[in-house]
Image (cartoon, rainbow, N blue to C red; front, side):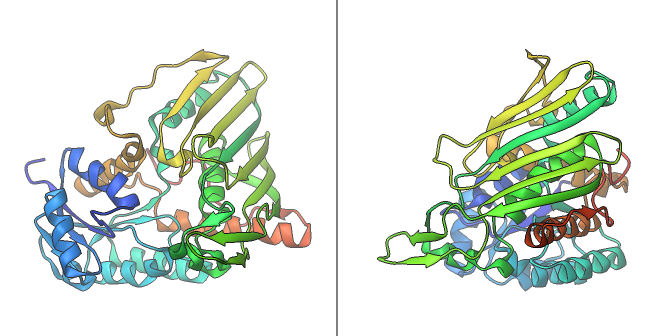
Length: 369
């Protein structure tokens, strides 16, 4: 590619944050992309971020980014309640979009954004980055090649340091279910989506939610608040192609003790993915083994990338190629709608104790490879 695509990242603060750890290094290291702009709330902080990251310009107003004719891709990497308006603004400006998961706090808003993306005829990607993890992609190939034989089931244990007994003052808003920033929507969705990516769509599912920390302490403040969201969920289901799902997703595990273990069992063998990271497995590398034997994984152009940037870079690479080749290989906003619907059905199942049958839930491969 002679001219790199210009990326503008909303939420790329030089001080801290997920965008700094993952999106910025991903864009900086991938061929065919260039960090053109960053957006931070205050102009002095935007200028500092642009200087720190080597971006052409820093903006305090997202509209300035949308109006910038040099920007090809807008990345939305801010708090979930802000996604809706920012994504709509980028779509109206005709920009391609990478939006972090979840697309929106509510299903109606997600449906609205997916519809708007189809009308805009731009390329969009939702940040379900584990689908782009090199070990996951290799595991998918092995399963498809019959390495474990007929799949009998998938079992997973997925943890995160977040959603524990102590929260930052700035995260109090996330304790409200309608904020869209809780364990079920974040860690739960990433985990279930990975199992679907490996083993296919679900035909039926149910769940049980719990609060391990019903009262949480606000760090640096002498008070506690009641937790309104859930910090533990157990999901079970049956895949359309056969086999069962069993997943336990847990918050509040100590830093350094946030394991991830996924086992695919077949009638001829077993395949495992293991790893873990404080933010959750989706923000790190995974190790692949077949029948207990470690498997080589080719990371391609992402070899040597930081752990936090590895999977995010995979989403950017797919979006880059989709724009250049006019293809569709990234899980898009329609996929986000389906996954949002599944998560809402799991929460409803936990509330009334009834199993849910598939209702336009996500599939293994949403688009051609």
